[in-house]
Image (cartoon, rainbow over all chains, first blue to last red; front, side, top):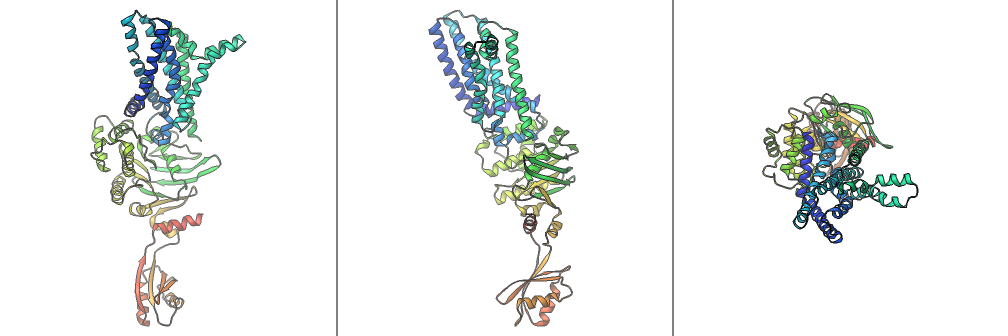
Length: 237
Length: 312
């Protein structure tokens, strides 16, 4: 566990000594502000519903950029060989990297905490709904970071890993929208079930359903497992 | 301490390492040499456990590399060909991180990092960003990370590449010190360094071990044993005739005439014991002139080229 903690701290340091984290923060907060403004002016509601919904799709495109370097860059720089010849268990490496990206997400989301404060100043927001919305977004980050890590483990080209991450996530977004065009009811349900929008929507209404929490947990573990398998199998080639 | 038992590595249809076996005893320092693409790096990667063997098994520091990789990783220090650095970090942060994952106890970790930095010539460089370092400094940081946990076994892939001559001497002395109480495999292209450092060499070509033994034996094996070169001038005799006369001496085993310059014939003489006094005696008796007589110790490079050339 102390090794995973060391990896986590190293990854956080790498994020914050390079411009990446700051640029990322800037882009994310700009978009969040835009969605916040549009959400308020369009609906007239003192809620974050529109902003948070849009942010989930924004994260789909941005998070892979945050995770793309994890394994791809280590492979390219030769530091992956260092990790694999030091007494670092693969799970500790995975956990440390995953946790670092998730922590950065938490920092991003914490910055958007300004918006509910603005709402509280001018209106009377439902704090319960806001809390569950943030919980939903965090779960989404868990899942997207895991998928991004998997993409990063497939190549030693960081850019390919970033775009690959977007490609992996896209079907989980589009499936929900495309479901309406499908005739067969079972297929429509299955496609809706595949989409993260279906699973995050209840959180934005203040509902925390264990089934949806489980969906995100399953998604996260599935991709972490795939990452682990992908790294293991590449050693044998 | 290190035992490669018939290990092979195949990448698809390419055989990078082909049934390689060798042993390195506790406290031994060996030079691991061979041309580019011979399989040196692949072999070392198998010994560190980074690459699994296709066949055969490797035992390092008493642990099977495949069965018990974590124990091996704890006891081995490894410097890959390109120093594995995180360009964003400072030297100090990087070495502290390595010390932490290498399980150097928190108490005394800073002292250890300072010690190693001083030893490789990095004192006062804690705050430098790795990405901005020159090749020589990267190499030193790479060496520092390999020894930070005071490993029993050190595997160094080209530790002095990119260093200037003064730095090469410094690092060579450091490796010599390190080798005093641990097992070291040193891979390098710079054969002169191997001659200065390593009592024993293992030579690999095309994935196979082609020579393994003390330096002198490897030179012998190449057919380039100790020999003597003499330059003699005898009026009225050509180099062939001079060679024949020298070859007639009982102390001499074999003579080869190499060339003639300024009337002096250059002869290469093979003999079990130093034949120079006998040759001088002959020359004096015959009234020949002597320009040079030297004992010629062949370099490892000559042996290397001979052996590798023969395999190719």
